[in-house]
Image (tube, rainbow, N blue to C red; front, side, top):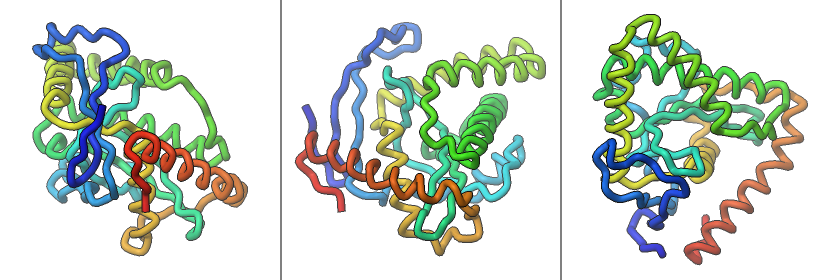
Length: 247
């Protein structure tokens, strides 16, 4: 069942797997998914937030930073995420962008230890994703949960070596915070967020041109075949769920 809002469609969904919600103080296991009508929900991350990211370890050059008013989710169980990264192409310009996206106000409010953890986590993912992209491995189907566990375990060891038991305490509070925030805000799933961010960059390429990177020659033809399928699949979702045509 869905409802319509000015900025998009809302779909109430129950988690597929039981989460210990009583442990983190949430009663409902329902998640309210949002399907935006356009890319107007995407904003540049404020300068003070970007400065805080750099202060605590973000050093990948030519990264674009954005924020959204939603919780993000990348797992089948709709677990909340407040940060993510994307490699997004603009084929007509033979370019791609490295993007980092955060839930609005997360960066400026996060505990220092939590933010350092998040930065290490996203850097690890972005480095791997860009490496695969540059060698043409754009259809890699690594299981999300398996890849996520490897990165999380590695980052956890680094952070515990540095902060010992304090990291565990901050980590638990961070998980509680994310789930509680998800109970109060809408959640956007990864594929939908990626699609609208991709559309946003197609439209605003000239504004962010200085952050672009050249697409490897062998990738150009692959992306030209893949992108129409992505558009078709996303359009189909909106048509079937909401009888809405994406412009």
